[in-house]
Image (cartoon, rainbow, N blue to C red):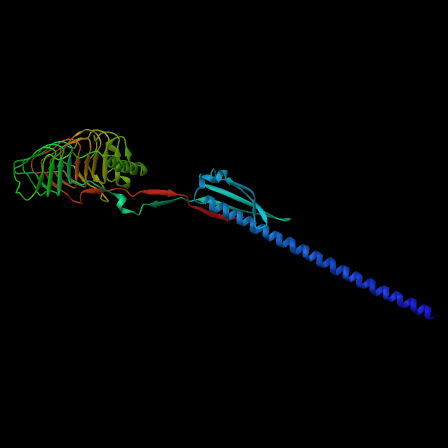
Length: 364
């Protein structure tokens, strides 16, 4: 009986040990599985974060230079204990709008995650805020590339006059100029002795590179706003953008309007009806050809008159309210008047630049 009891005790002990071992094994397996699951979750989360980091880096690289997105690719870049690969697809062909998609795959251990974004380029137009760049200083209210001959009852209410030639002010013509200079002689019948007369001065450049660049700015402004005309008959009274550029002559033009009117061809403005008022401080009239321009009768121009290659004859009751630049000679008669309204120069269209503005339209 005692031996049977001892045997039973051994069996009980072995049974208990077996149960304990089974329980411990199960607990160990469960812990291992939980650790593995935690590792997988951690690696999946890290892979997601790595993929998003690669995507953010790619977005920052292309958001100000959308043109580079077609060739953008980064392969297996090490980051945060894993790697990411970013590829781009240009979707611009869809509707003509600049669109693209960035796809980033993050890898960390066995964890893998893919994220993507849809992008769209919405360019911004930036204006130059430096107003000093938007004004052209002419220095003189009246600048003539050759002789200046004013007679009759001509009046000029200006500050400074210069001519690359002789100046002759006869008849009842008079001027309130403070300074009048010439490369030749100055004959002034109505001079009261309060003016400064400078004879035998150096010639002043008429059509400088800076003036040419300023005129090109206006031409570009007209082109941008679709205000380029082959025939002057097509020029509206108020051109879009405030500047009209005619590649031909002035034939057919109404000779009136609000804005800046630029002519590449010959210009003839004789007769009544000439009435121009510039906008935004721009010039009123720019003549680029070597025309013999005549402004007479009751013509009225508010704004600068720029003729770097032409000659000018002004008479009748014509009046110009703004500075004048003439490439050749200038003559005047009758009761025509010049008033230096708006200062010695003119405003330029603001410099505008277009910059990429890439925005995220969708996350995937």
